[in-house]
Structure formats: C-alpha cells, structure tokens
Image 1 (tube, rainbow, N blue to C red):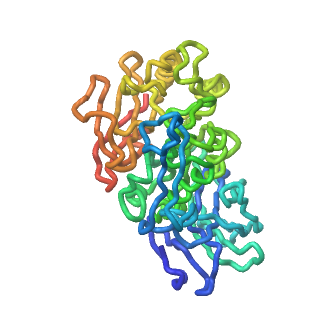
Image 2 (tube, rainbow, N blue to C red):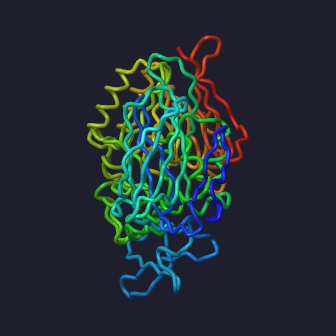
Image 3 (tube, one colour):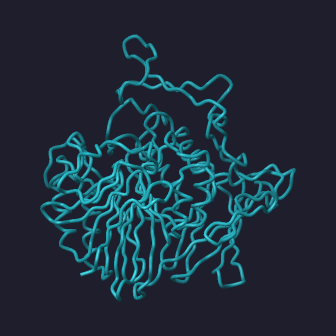
Length: 493
C-alpha cells in the first residue's frame, strides 16, 4: 500500500502505468478505495465496473487477532470447539476490545460518491459519467454499466471517490481492460482460470502470488470458478460473510490484478453458503447467515449482469460458457434420475441451444465443479459423482458430440487433465490458488483417465493462437511462481 503522504506514486505492470492508491492531501480523511475495483462481464461492446468505498486506506494488518467460533452443546449449553460441520448453534466470540471493523483483515465500507471516466486507449477524450452514491446495503459499492464500446480495443479507466457531502476527490485509481473481438476475427486470446483461494492459505503478505505471476502472461481475461472465499468456519452472520470479501479483495495483489484484467466470476458452495450447499438445505451450523443471503451477497460483491449463467464470445475461435451450479440444484442426497439436477431445466435448455448455435472454432464449458473427474467416491456433489450420474452422463454425451468442445473445472484441489473413458470428453482442472490449498487426492493415485495429475497449487492458462495457419487451443498449468508444469495442445478438427 502507498502511504497517505505519497501523491501520484506509480507502479508499472504489464507495460501500463497505474496508481495503486492516490490521495490528494495529507489532511485527506477519505473515503478510500482500499478494495480496489473489479472489471466484469466484458463483451464486444459492454462492461461493468464495480467500485467500493472504504473507511480506511488499507485493510487491518495481521498484528491484530481474529474472532473465535464455538458451538453450543444443545443439552448443557456449554461452548465447544468445532467438530466437523455439526448441526449445532454457533457463537462468535470477538477478542476483548475488537469488533468486526477492527479485526484482522477488516476493510469496513463507507458512504460517499464515486465517478468513472473512461476512454479507448488510442483516443484522447475521456467520457465522464455522473457521480453516484454507493449503496451501504450492497457492500458500499456501485456498479457502472458501460455500453457502446468497440470490439477488440483496450480501454483505460479512472475511478474517483469523494465524501458524501462533497464533490472533492478524496482518492482515485486507474485501470484498464480489453473488450472481446468480434466473431469474425481470428484473434489470439489468452486467459487465466483458478479455483480455491481461501484466506488462511494466502501465500504472501500481499495476497495470492498467482495474481502478479499470471499478469506476466498478459491475460485478456480471467475466470475464477468459485470458492474464492470459504464462509463455513466464520461467516455466521451476513456481516461476517461480507467481511470475507472485504479482506480477500483488499490484498494488494488482488487490487493490482483486478484493475487491469477483465474478469468473470462464478460462485460455488463455499462462497454461496457452506460445503456442498443447495437450496433448502437445513443446518444450525451457519448460525444467522442463510443460503438466500449468500446468493444476494455474491451479486453485491461482483460486477454481474442479468443472468448468473452466461456465454461470451471471444473472436472467431473461442466461446466460453459459465454455468450456475448452486441456485437450481436438487438435494444432493435425493435419488438419482431424470428429475435430479444441478443446473435446472431452464439453464440446461439454454446451454444446449446456445452451444448448438455457436460457430466458434473452440467451445469451452468452464464449470465450478467437475463434469468428468474422476472424483473421490466419498463425494456426492457434482456431475462426476454417482449422485448426479444421470445428468452427468447426459452432459458428457452432449458435450463430446460437439466439434472441438472441452470442459474446464474448478472445485477440486489438484491439477489434472482427464479423458472420459466412455465419451472421450477432455476435462482440464485448473487446481487451487496455492500449494497450501492443494490436497484431496494422492499424487501416486494416477488413474487410466488421467493424462496429467499434479497435487499442487497454482493456476491454468488457456490460449488461442494460429499455428501453421490453423486455430489451436493450448492449456498450460503453472505453479504460483509461474513455473510451467504441463502443456497440452488441443488441435481443431
């Protein structure tokens, strides 16, 4: 973070000069932009810019304590340590003298105004939008919806903050992004995919190393497949759930990355509610925090459009599909059959229709959970598990019948490439964000389905390029320090 006394101190990333934070005077009392900005839902002509105002210029450091959570014994009322995910009432105990705004990682929001200026990189005139008040009920954030953009162009942003009772600028931040190319252009496209980024497993003092590492690859866009935060242990109220987002996205690495790269976000179980969550699930374990609140909080914390499942075209050779895997699913333990679903009938019909209509050279389903696997026999939450075999079989068959279509998945805490024994469908698991988060599979347990297996942290890169005059899709797995671990080439038919 930059000091309050520093004005206009620049950091250079990927050939673009940006300001980490800029404060306009030593007497400045905010509001600030300590959670940065997020650039989302970028298409050929539109984008959404998410901005949040904060009380302080940076998150609370690691030199202060965290709350503790105990569970009330239903018979004695005694407070006990956690034992699994027991169906008992939690009690959050804050350290003496601390509250949700002063504990480790806290980045409380603040009312005020935000303004956005933007322009194409090769133009000199800025388009200036009006000042807008942030919404305290929606993370103290505001989302600017941009339209009428030109395809395949770089855009520059300038976000400004001001107090609620003034239009004097208290902080500002620069950013950039690239719009998607049109469907008739053979464009080279590079993108990053990751899953599993829990707060306890952050691998540097400034946040996950994968963010500055992957910037070195100059991605056009980024996809987080879910489990960005893990509510289960501490988010026993809606406010504590929001605190999870505040602390994760106030790390400097996150801020520097997300103000430069167009991103698409998918939620999974741990950032919807709790492990393997589904609508109607009953438990006392999550306290006052509800599944419905989790659904809304995700929409408040990210730049999202009208649909939580969507497809985006990136040039002639790439189209991606981002499904929603929590809001429409059946009870995980319900008997399997034609009516049991993860996606729901409406989303499934949309998926099949849009895939059939697409003339993209390569089609990629980027799923929050596995479609192929293999997965552990103890799990019963995804299409690779026996509990959802009927819908999984149907999906694998449909996708395998499409020309040049593969699946990418998150959720699993290990990197892999697998080939379905029945359909030949390829699946690429991006793996978790850090080595500390890797696990759940044994390195020596390589099955016939595995083309590549590595129980490590890091991220995955996908790229579209022309090789010998033919569109080619390449997936590369990296460790958190951007060391190449594996490369796989998918040739177009």
